[in-house]
Amino acid sequence: MSDLFDLPFEEDPHEGANEPEPPVPTRRIYTVTELTVRVRDHLEERFFEVWVEGELSGVRLWNTGHLYFTLKDSSSLLKGLMFRSALRYLKFKPADGLHVIARGKISVYEPKGEYQIVCEHLEPQGLGALQLAFDQLRKRLQAEGLFDVAKKRPLPALPRKIGIVTSLDGAAIRDILKVLRRRYQNVHVVIRPTRVQGDGAAAEIAHALRQIVKVPQVDVVIVGRGGGSLEDLWAFNEEPVARAISISPIPVISAVGHESDVTIADLIADVRAPTPSAAAELVVARKEEFSSRIDRLHERLVSCAHARVQRLSRRVHELSGRRALAGYTTRLAMTERRADELTRALADALRSAFSTRARRLQAIERRLDAFDLGRRLARNRTSLVGVDSRLRATVISRTHRARARLSSLAGRLDTLSPLAVLARGYAVCWNEDRTRAIRDAADVATGDTVHVTLSRGAIAAKVSGIE
Amino acid sequence: MSESSIKDFEAAIAELESIVKKLEEGDLSLEQSLALYERGVTLSKFCHARLEDAERRIELLSERGEIRPAPAGLAGNDADR
Image (cartoon, rainbow over all chains, first blue to last red; front, side, top):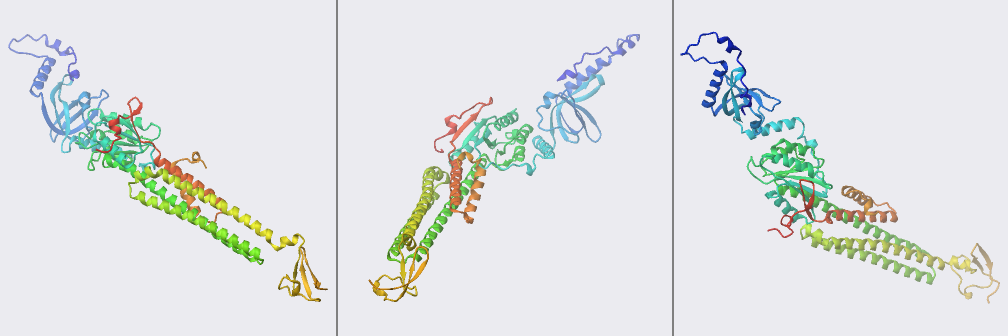
């Protein structure tokens, strides 16, 4: 650390000027450099390790990485310097106006004859160093707008893969996997193990985050660790982690420590989960929400189809009712009744097929409700799908069949219509006022007027005799 | 009407919702409503499949970017202790 102080001594320009003076053996005359070195040695020995408090001012980081500053109180100044090697371990950023306690040794910068403190450690007074560092970084990131609510992205509806960045040794990973296992069997998890505390942990977490967000199909990332001391959780308060979260292309859920621990990572993440378990619940809750939404939609879909078939069967009734108007011959009436019966049977079959299946579906669902949703879906998925496709097949085939039967019945009704008979050359003979068809020769007398309906047109005729 | 014509889960739910709405409003020909019903069933199946058919897998991503299955102890296929 003393590279600045061990500069090679330069020839003192005044040394030559002193030479002509006659040497006085009792006087010890130093060169400036000699004296300065003596003073330095004395100070360094005497103030090998001191603690001093004061306000920082003139703080300047040189491009060598060393920090220069002045410590002052109301009436004195003390120059100070902190080497890059010591600076590395500082959690907070020294800044003008901060009240600090410095630990180090007093030394002398010979070229300027200045004494100064070579600082080994700095800590802010009042607030802890960590708290101060936290506040400083939070302020900075806030100014950049990284905590803006508008920047928070919603969690994906259904993540194809869930990324997890945490330590394999910690409680967090076990808690997360436990929740996922209990709530849903079929999750696809990609874990990127990383150290979560100690020197360099922040850089490792940041690297892990940048890596996992690139894995195809990972739609959400949980980053975190279990509970611990403020120092243990510190990596999640460091800038590299914050930056890695802020540039993630996919939503990040932070889950650090317990409910009461709020880290920079928590502030910057899209969603903050109070604990790792809660993070897992968050992902799963979305899934359950969607699952029940789909179930409801499916029910509505089926009941729509059901209603549609009911309307259809009502129309079949109406149509067959209209056909009945034409039934004034016995055969016609009988055919009409048969058609009616057939139609009703069809409609009944349709209805009962539906209600049986609807009842079965409801029964299955009621039974399923008694179970955990996850197990319910997993176990009964196949049967639900089966019921559903049978249901659909029934709707389609029954409807088709009903329509086919109906049109064939209509065809048969047409061939039985009297008009069709007339087309074949038969005629209908009516009494004079056309109220009755004449079926029996005894119903008319010679001289009566009758009307004859032909296929095309009608004629009036007089009975010239009974045969 | 095949599953490949379904873009993604959220789009599928949205489409299913609009189909159900249309069917509930009525005023459709039998053919139209059957076609919609069929599409609705396909969508509903797709959504269920997306919810349920994923395989349970726990994998580890190494620092070098390699993915391998997690050790059995971690994947923990056994019941909770």
